[in-house]
Image (tube, rainbow over all chains, first blue to last red; front, top):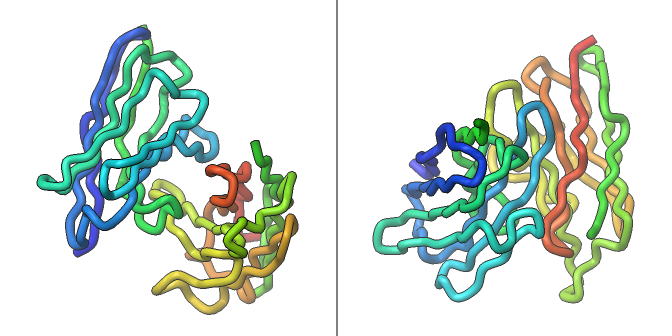
Length: 115
Length: 111
């Protein structure tokens, strides 16, 4: 079955760090660009970051540039998002999505930034 | 940044009746490669988003044919020909021509 499974969310204090993971299965992971999209409570969707299948290029929304780092391990079929200097406004469900057109989504993992 | 403006933001529809959602972009979504990267997503209550339509009018696999997308340039529309109970949720347009931005979402309910 083709699926994405996120993990690593939780409660963290402002200024703290967290690393999210997204395990992919059912497709040739290394052939696809992958993305992170987030959704703050009760609000809409916001693209966060994307990375090419070959690890060669990555892109970030201005709101997270310099604080978040996307990476992937194609040998483990896993996408990551390292989040540093977290702010209250980063509180959201973080979804992993396939390609830059988001044709497949995971179930999401909740990140709460609060003191 | 490209801004996508959806209307209406909320829609109450009688079962079996049509529904239409507009998505207007602040600039043309025609890419330099000639394609228009405008997608539509459905998010049912308590679920992850699901892509319905890509590149304006192409339905994803498994999407019922009562869903259709149309438009060009800066004006786009998602139509549901006959609303069913399972169509309740929030619908988002998204452009992938100039980075990535989403519309605010349109909530569809049953009247």
